[in-house]
Amino acid sequence: MSGIYIHIPFCRHKCIYCNFYSLASTRYMDKISGAINAELLQRKEYLGAQKIETIYFGGGTPSMLEISDIESIVKTIYSLFKVASDAEITLEANPDDLSPSKLKALKNMGINRLSIGIQSFREEDLVFLSRTHSSEQVFRCINDSQQAGFSNLSIDLIYGIPTLTEDGWKENLEKAFAFGIPHISAYSLTVEEKTPLEAMILKGKMKPVDENLSIAHYHILTKLTRQQGYEQYEISNFCLPGAYSRHNTAYWQGKHYLGAGPSAHSYNGASRSWNVANLVKYIETANSGNVEHDQEILNQTTLFNEFIMTSLRTIWGCDLVSAKKKFGAEKAEHLLLNATPFIESKQMIYSQGKLILTPEGRLFSDGISSTLFEDEGY
Image (cartoon, rainbow, N blue to C red; front, side, top):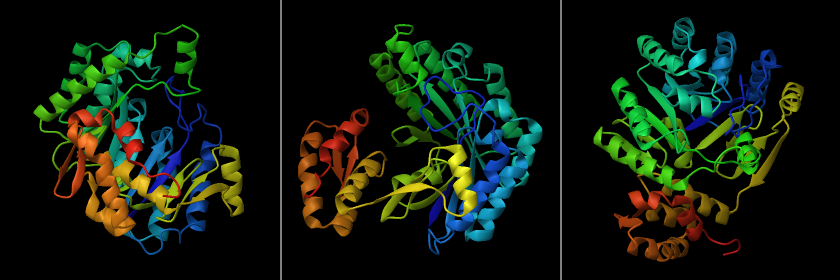
């Protein structure tokens, strides 16, 4: 089973913290679906005969697209690939795009999961983050989405925002719980390179992000979600029973996927490729029959390190039986040996043949994973 990711790069406004490939413009938006359909046709053999289990429209802001463009891409996928009858089809959306009529149209054409980038229920946080929607639109779009029949909803929240106190963060979470949102993705505000946020901090126009505040918010997040019956199945993702994001879970489990659109990545188990992060070049090369992209052939060391990094992010952990089958007994044994200090410090547990990060260990997942990585040529 595999998935298809569609990257839509358009945004109404570039948020100060965002480093994804996106454009605060609608220029060429009328050409993107045709180019993506052309790419899908060119790469229809990429996943072999694997059945498509998930389709995910990300960005950017896919909800800016016309319904006819989204429907055209979905129809192309169904015409070229074998799609599971219960496929999860997700659309990332912003609150200001989700009118009742658009929600109805999305539901009718097959979208069965929405991932809404609300970021906060609080107006002051939204202003700080330079979001284009208001707090009022957040409440309205969730209500409208549920009224339209979207029970499979996810929202994005950001914590560690300088305007967000501990009480404000609790308030955000409690509002999500009150709506019965089955899936919450929560991310710490991070200062990425070459973003307006970084520039403002470097120029002294804004205070640096307070790491201690982010840690305090994280502990509140894990405590309150646990009390409400949510499962932290991945570092930043929390869900009620059975409401996992099937698409993102597939990434963490190393399943194969095809990415279409400018800057989209693809992975087939042997190599990784990524399309040109330039809209004009993407459209030109897709329509000419050969999408411009780069490719990396993955060696065993790279695959092993990625296996560690992705599996440790989840509640299922790093399965040493699987590691032994995929990479050999020596690597699996070496991994367990290297993990011993983290087990002793209670940042990790070893249970039923799996290495699993504890709640405290999840705070340091990137550092722990990199310590466990193998060097090239091992």
